[in-house]
Image 1 (tube, rainbow, N blue to C red):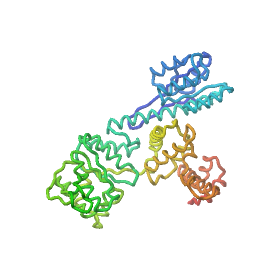
Image 2: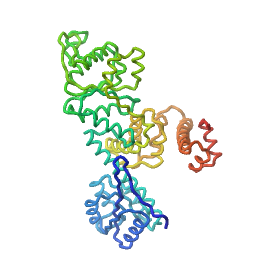
Image 3: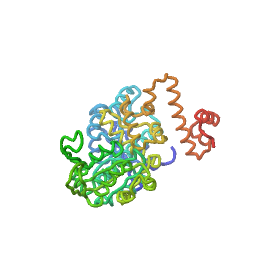
Length: 467
């Protein structure tokens, strides 16, 4: 019946291997024995058998079960009642329904209520193995995400930084090592890579976590307003200053001040900020008295500050004060192995926020995410998932849910809009196939299930260079 396959999931940075445990629920002993034999001889699954739903719930409660395979008709309760009880108590469990052909309608209803998949009796061995393999893969990915997030929580005390690639692990270790100090940190990287999330992780792991984390975007305000926001002012200093105002630097006393887009500070504010970093002193606008503060400064930029120093637009002494420790946040296109983990996190976040029962994403939808370049990085990915959850009418995110908003909001006629969206998809799909096959068109076409000639015609249509 085929080669024996070992199913496991490895988290590289921890060397942690998780095996799949499956509870099989059926009141027919022959069926239980047959399913157990298939799953243990053709796979290395650990199978736990139950002849009633209540017995199954005891097993689920005692053992770390990944997948539940249950018959639709049981003696102590219906399959839908059993499903509802599981989802109420263990919402993340992965459930497959077994049903006769005449009860497919109930199985579809079960999937709407949160079941992952269903198979009809009598089934072929391969059908059972395929369904269980896919369910197990999903369950183990969920387990990995929960495990990794718990590790991140232990490291930083906050959620948000997600990823288990080499670059992200390096960032986690750096943050862990410097968090307890008050050393200034400069976060670099493209917009949307998570610089503010990293800054919050540093703060909430530090001894300052009980005090304020104060963030300001230095590029978002005109110079005069930004100066007042940072340093505060006294009453009557300028028109509209009807009362004394405490600035963000003073608000940050004992805590952390996060200066986003620090490269946009004017020369005048740079001088005043340098004094804060050197001496812990500042003066509010219009004030005669100098105030002292004890704060940590974390700054961020998507600009090249070294070039700004050479061009004379950024003070060299301030630059070296800010970059005692530098952390570069990599663009998402350079850590695509983290996309499934990020997508799963955002899916759960927005399904909860929008009160939708969406717990999974189809393989083609995930492949679409993997193939995109994500110029807006993690922020763009998060927005794409949020939009997909909002527009989805199913319990699973599909490719159509991830199509660009332009396909819906454009004033173009239907045919023009459809053509544009399809061209974008084809271009991403074909380019990804070519990259995987190192530019070999024949191999890429074969992988995609296309004739070489059809593949080349589509490349030409999408203006993809063959060289």
